[in-house]
Image 1 (cartoon, rainbow, N blue to C red):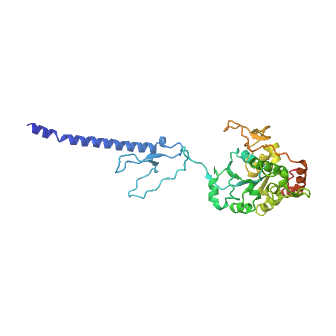
Image 2: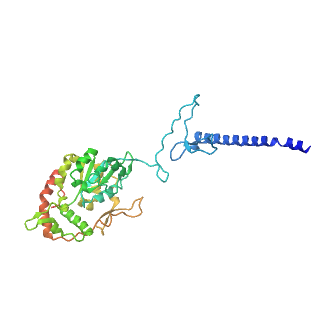
Image 3: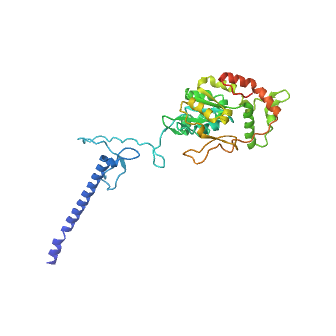
Length: 360
């Protein structure tokens, strides 16, 4: 009798387990269905960042685990026959913070091509304040030293820009590199060129002062400037002297670019009237005059203007310690001789560009 009771009580237990399993599976399926409907069809399922609804894939046949989220398919009638899977739209690449990266890396539309110790760093830092300009902070030296790396390498160095923004880079040695004009022209004949020039004698002394700070054992400025000072023979093979022959270097550029595509910034006026000089730079680039007097203050210690603090910066921004060095004292007679040497080249330069920089 005990056996029969045990025998009759035993079978219902598997059926009860199956009922519970079926109820659990049905409940889980309903949960997936409701969640999908909520994600795809309700405005609450839309992503605030990407502006597209997100859904969860249903459980696969092999696993009850949730799959990764994907963009929802558009609502519509279910096809009677199975169709090939269509990949969802590609989402924009994201940075490490998870926010979408904005803009595209483009080849520069404008270049600051020269000259060394003329004020190119100041122009770069000032123009970077403009919201319509994105500039590379370092000097890539692509068109003089790294041309063999190719345009893709060069483009990859550039900051991301929107369609409305200008990409810009600065390498002052381009102006005195014979191959640079042709190479830039081959990249884009529409490239806008900015040249920051300065009194060639003052520029040469500044150049020498910088070199002396790195190599204290170099010869004197006078010894490097002249092959024979008594005869007044200037050594144009010395780079500090050669760079100041602006009109000779300009001839190479005018073989490829019209003068209207080259803008000359006065290094002297950049100190005395930074807003005025930068206003003309903005006009040349075809952007609104955003950078004005309100962005500058004169730093008496350095002897040149600095940027005032902005909404994105709590502190004023001046150029680095290497800028504004006290120049080496040079014999006034040496300076006079160099001024006489440069005079005919300066006059020819004024006539070519249609601008008198008043260096005499």
